Amino acid sequence: MNSGIIPISDLQLALSVGLVLIAGGISAMLRLGLLKSLAWGTIRTFVQLTFIGYVLKYVFSANNLWIISGLILIMCFIAARASVKRTPNVPSYPVSLAFWSLLTSTVLVGLVVVRIIINPVPWYSARIVIPIFGMILGNSMNGIALSLDRLYGEVKSRANEIETLLAFGATPWEAVRDCVREAVRSGMTPMINSLMVVGVVNLPGMMTGQILGGVDPHEAVRYQIVVMLMLTAAVAIGCLLFVGLSYKKLFTPDGALKSEGKV
Image (cartoon, rainbow, N blue to C red; front, side, top):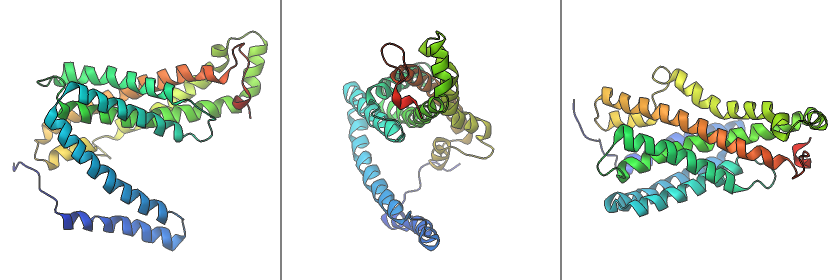
């Protein structure tokens, strides 16, 4: 098997914009109103990925634990803000809970994968740690955003039921326990669906990238199995932590349901 990556020239990269032009043409033809978003998204993709390419080149070259840790903290903060912004119906929600939930799940699962399963030398190798932690953050971010949105949706739709339970002496946790279950289930559903169809309907990005880079497919599959299982664990932990900390924000100090938790 031939090894090595087939380089993409500037011209070939520019030609890839044609794929977005097709989507933009469909949007314009059907008057979907997505042309501006597609154009802005494409520009941001080029700028952000080009910038991070230079950053990662420096980080990989330095391979310094403190630099890697600082970058991961920045990534966690950006992911936390993005996850909260994806839930516009949630009023004045603090980013701090999302940040600590993401940081805890990412570090916990990421260190298990890096230190025990892959075990590179040194263990904090930037080429391993940054991609692993980045994948965990991206999926956990989506999971907690879905969980938060579902939690508030469930509580609003069951406000009368929750207030009745509180009136009969139930604690806030007992009153929203079913809502919490639905919220965590909602956050985990996309990951579970991915587990069901991976390798049959979907060839994941990491596996595809390794194969395109010349890695033996069997080795790429092994890495992808580790990735899928680590993402499932991280999303589960992140959603559970986030929702477990979040439901308390729906109640006043004396245990009454706040107005934003009602329809």
